[in-house]
Length: 135
Image (cartoon, rainbow, N blue to C red; front, side, top):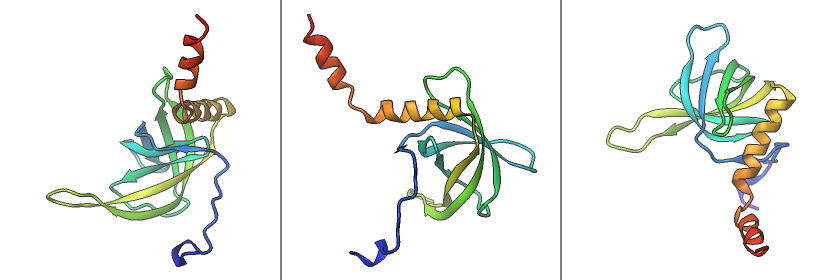
């Protein structure tokens, strides 16, 4: 086992999918929402790349725009980890990859996120192949 993997244990209950979905977040107690894109999303939380450093356990109000839903999903979240991530380009800047756990989300909204993730992960070619074979 490599040194950097020692002690690491995957604790997620839900699948995650690397997806850039639109997210608006507000730090509870601060005015104004900030619009960003996710790095990944799952029914238990998401990862955002932020320009600001936040404290672990910071509470957030979230609006998540899942592509096939008319209305954004509204949830409460909390920061569970954050690490610096440099961007590439002529003038690299430091951003922060930020892991957010949902702490207040309806079962219906969690179901919709989970459905979206599963639809993105599962191959659609099997469905298309079986439909073609029935003619």
